Image (cartoon, rainbow, N blue to C red; front, side, top):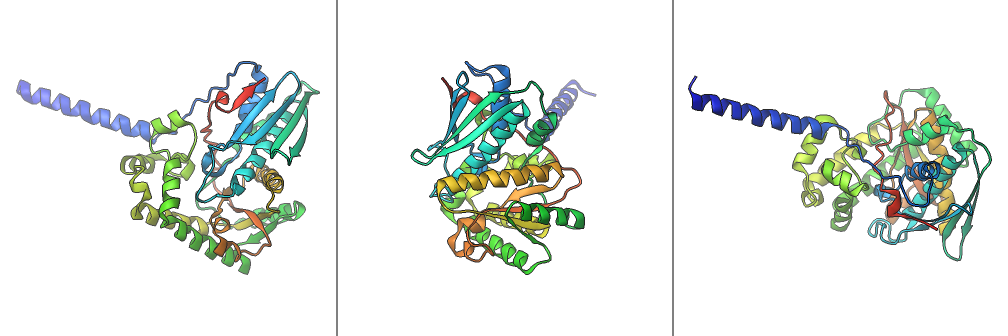
Length: 359
């Protein structure tokens, strides 16, 4: 073999190996290293605050600001005005639902580490107050594991397990929520309203642009920003993730092809749905926070029983479709079902110092 031919072959091999390595790395799960260290907090409180951040929020915007007084055993939670979905959530309904999810998850984290906690809402400032006091050195690993396990699952679900269906129905009844199984007429109404609302949003330029801003379209972008929707959070993994990152950018994510694929994905999700949970409440910010708290209790219970959850708010976000839903004032709509492997929280979360101020 001639020297030039050998060099060309080696060069080609190196390029191919490099490309293959890049593909394999891209397809792996993105691990985000959240910095939990923050001046003025001990290791235990830092871990508790991190666990609280694993709460769900719309588009994973993580819309909370914290004023923390560790020596006094109290903290205040408020909405971050810079982290709001102005198009689909102009009145901050979902923002305050997310704050309720955060408060309840944080309460659970404190309880798991042996603290007594007391929650109150200040309607004059629309802030949430939490006082905490250490009463035991005993740690509850099951609660911690449940918080870490809880996540939004956007895969199609199995609907055949009747025992799980009955469990969800009983859980909702005990918690003052509504549940509509796949074999009810209400389910069909919710499914159609959700589909139609999603189609409307998918082709709306402002809604598409807002979603595009919160998409994280590479492993690097996910690691750098530590928020928003990565491929894994959209249910895209492995080789599909490689091609998604390769061919999607923030500009074409606002286009028709991306919208068409989103509609197809949504229809697949709705076809793989055991039932819908509707959590209702009044429209005040205090009531929305309480609604988020209730939804989190239900979600954590379902997590413990390996029942997957996917919030689908499209119909609630669009007034013309919200009125079609079989509930007086729905605030959260959860698609539920079963999967062979439950999975875990992708833990794409910001550094604690980004939103916590210690006094």
